[in-house]
Amino acid sequence: MAFKERVFSGVQPTGNLHLGNYLGAIKKFVELQDSHDCIYCVVDLHAITVWQEPAELTHNIREVTAAFLACGIDPKKHIIFNQSQVAEHAELAWIFNCIARLGWLNRMTQFKEKAGKDRENASVGLYAYPNLMAADILVYRATHVPVGDDQKQHLELARDIAQKFNNDFASSIAGHGFGDAFFPLPEPLIQGPATRVMSLRDGTKKMSKSDASDQSRINLTDDAETIALKVRRAKTDPHPLPGDEKELAERPEADNLVGIFAALKGISKGAVLNEFGGAQFSAFKAALVELAVAKLGPIGAEMKRIIDDKAYIDSILADGSARAQVMAAETMKSVKDIVGLVRR
Image (cartoon, rainbow, N blue to C red; front, side, top):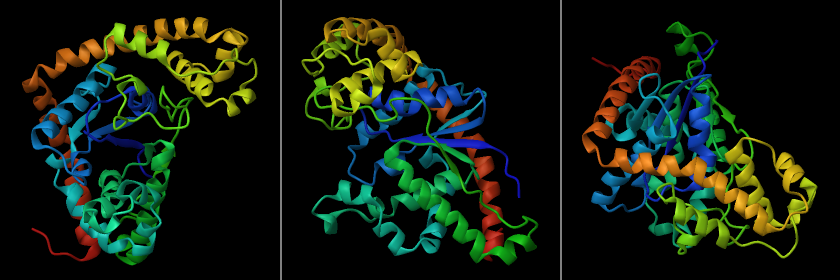
């Protein structure tokens, strides 16, 4: 059957939103709202798969919401909400726990990375969280998900779960008037350069809030002076910028800075090298400072303003959650009918 195109994605409220979150996710969220119906979620249930200090979690939920708003997502035309206010996410996740196979979850590399060597001490939530991610997407029967490389495997799992549900309940789905499939198989949306932003101190490691050095990342709330200082201090190599994009492959720090410039300006890496190929890093960094301050400075200032208005943020989340729940509840009614559960 044909499904209405709808975008869903979420950001975990784990604090210290940085340039990687912006270029890898939120900037693309803003662009997609011009062409799609969009649902953007603060995935707080995912955050608690590892311990979160309650007061910090509350702040971080509001901070992500403020980032969505400051970057330009329109909460009237689209939906911004936090996951825990829509109970259908957890309800559908349980049904998916009964659809997904252990072998599928055992292949999830991100669990192995996050749990580390002491996997026996990891929470069940951390292990099963890809099933909740599938529920996040499919409770709205979303067709497209903007994802980074590190989430592609989880989206493949969501597709596998959707396909197995459609196959397992094919006759019931048809009997309830949904044709040959109830859930769509969501497609990834990976757009533009710098979908994976690396550390300013080590071009082989992803930019991360957990890095001990604050100099490794540009936080969205950094002021212009701090942004400039971090860019100037960013690790480089002793050679001028190349003129050919292929030469960046063996130069991770150069590749990272060129990718950041390209993503901030909305051009290709090749276009950046056409302008700066042969230049010393000092000249290129000066241009990158000017661009980063111009693009990120207003976002940081607006985030700080919005964060101070907790009542406004909470009203945005409450309105978005109410609108999201209408869609989610409709999906769950149909899922219960298809599975054979008796409902009110």
